[in-house]
Amino acid sequence: MKAMVLNQIYSLQEKQNPLELVDLPDPTPKEKEILVRVLTCGVCHTELDEIEGRTPPSRFPLVLGHQIVGRVEKAGSRAMKFRSGDRVGIGWIGSACGKCRFCLEGNENLCPEFKATGRDINGGYAQYTTVQEEFAYAIPGIFSNLEAAPLLCAGAIGYRSLRLTGMEGGKNLGLIGFGASAHLVIQLAKHKYPNSKIFVFARTERERNFAKELGAFWAGDIGDDSPEKLEYAIDTTPAWKPIVEGMKNLEKGGRLVINAIRKEEIDKESLLKLDYAQHLWQEKEIKSVANVARNDVGEFLQLAAKIPLRPEVQEFRLEEANQALLELKQKKIRGAKVLRID
Ligand SMILES: [Zn+2]
Ligand SMILES: [Zn+2]
Image (cartoon, rainbow, N blue to C red):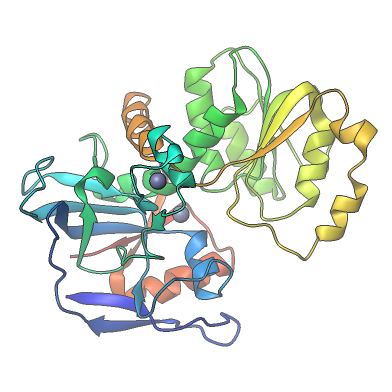
């Protein structure tokens, strides 16, 4: 099969084409796995973190990609959940032990044996991949192969973030940063909590206008004072300053959820501005969200089909994966980038 592989960690300043197009043997599904012919695979910021070593892969060479839509080609001898020809999705959670306390509580994302698709096991920048059947999801028919891909990461983690805020209808929600995940969260929140106001904090005019088009009650810059206090906020930025600014805008007893796999060191001194009285006193909370459990992906896909969510996508061929990644690095973003593989 054709695959775009990563052979080592690179700095994207020095190496613009980190992935190499190679021929690999087709993978064989183990007993409880399915072999999936990949149709599309989303391109995520996390891939940049993997390539540059901030979220280092656990093996090389590695096939990246964790927003996979494909068709079941073949099932392992003890895999019963899908039939050949079924359309399935695979997300960041590739496997977990299934026995530990976290797994039993439905938080497999916190399992000590958690393995990530496209980081610890081969992902979807290839013509075929395998996955344990329990970690694949049926894709609702309403979505095209291109549309479904970004739902599997940005959408699912947005869903978990919204869930972890503990949000109740009628109260205010702030979205700090307005990228791939937040533009889906706003649609989710509007659907689930039609009486709530959503306040968006974004750096560019373009993002703020987009937020208003999608129904934001108000949109301002990252450091702006919110016109009303926020009971809940979700931060999707890679920086620290937006956290401090977000806590300032939080209502008493409010909760800010950080949806980011890492925070840059570069503006860490912003944290020194975190003032107990202004930012934390009065029972304000900060909580992080660590990617997704299977329930989040499954529940989110059903909800997304009901709304229905419409992700904006920009299409690339498998061979153009390096270009898609470079554009992501350079923040040339027009909707979610998705590889079409056929
Ligand atoms: Zn992702
Ligand atoms: Zn476990």
